[in-house]
Image (cartoon, rainbow over all chains, first blue to last red):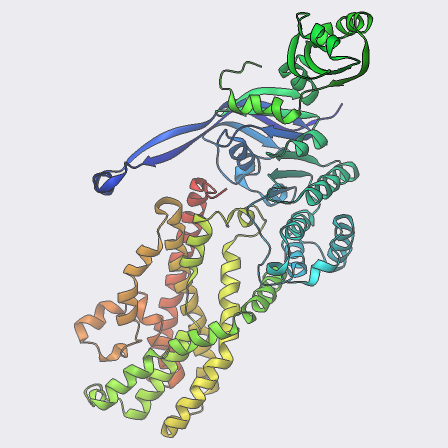
Length: 331
Length: 258
């Protein structure tokens, strides 16, 4: 039985936010009497994560995904509730806990801008009490995996975004953390760099059995890495479970593109009572509920002269987008 | 200690990237030489029984002490907190203030040759001021300059931690600029102040920032044991205050900018 490495109970976080009306009047009022209100951005959430799992946190901007990651890694204090990560209370930031985790934020960097990344790597190795020989070995291994051997000696400011992100990853992984918190790690990277990064994370997870908590707005990151997702909406968890179940739940229909031999058959299908998504000459796309797909196909194949047929799932981005934009979406 | 040494090496490499900027900073610290000019041209030194030579040595020493005790942690820290740059460092097993501390030491090492060049030019222009400091006093002045740096670093770090509450802590630091300028001995040796002012100035940390180490280096009369005791007492007072405010402040950290 795989043990839970992260346990979160009734976790909440409030931030004090001050607001200001526009214009001179608003500015003067703000100067003399500042209005602040407490905003509950995370509301009594509960979940567990097992060792070695790769979890995707999904949600719209401002839903609370990054705040959850920040609390899990001990960067910010929770307002209420309890968190246990690897048996530690993260916000106490004990050395043994910090040596076990890492946080990578797509838009924040820890590498020293004017020096080659190798300097930051050795510095991090020293901070995490790794001797130089071992550090050298790990840098070699990780740079091989990330394919950045040549970039190690070029000042960070001269590296491309993709090379910099890989170097950030290396700096963040040199102490072999068991738990990785990744906040939009592929932000701004081109398609090839994104793919390489995902390939690396998969490999790292396989080799070290590290637990990975990931937020990303690129659905490909989520679909290729995460079996399980946690959907966050307005600070609450709206879904916690397998990604494929979520997809089935949110998309109970399949899209079937049928290429008829003649336009006449396509017209007949158009009037047969099916939900039609589109029709162009002899090609017609129907939306059929999953449970009726096989029986409907049998009927169609027996009744019409069909040249070709394609069954498609609706695009994952479209499905996940439903979670992000529809407040009232019940999962 | 190994961590700090590695950190220092890396910060020094980084500082060397900014050597021109640091040279300019070193040159901008020549305010004691302007003050020397004002003092000697107006014969003000006669009123405090210090001859021209000793006064020029004092101001050169004040320049040196200032070069190796300049602190700017509040500005770096404020920027790092407001832009969220502190986040990766706060979850490393080393207090982020050690990064700033070693940055300062690295900057001092980088400044050293420029300070020596400026002193050399000063001696060319004022050959009567040339002196070889007593080795013991030289050693004591180095120690007291380092303690002066520590006091200023702790004061600014405490103010910097107020970022967790006010976001603009550097404005508070500016309040300290005037007393530091006037009471530290940068503009005038503290001995030149009226007796009633001196009686309370010596209870503040200010005269131990420039005046005390500069007097040690220049060979002027000063209360050595009293000076060191006050420097150490201020450090002992400020250090726990810093630890407390850091510990409370990080609970307020919101990791803005991400």
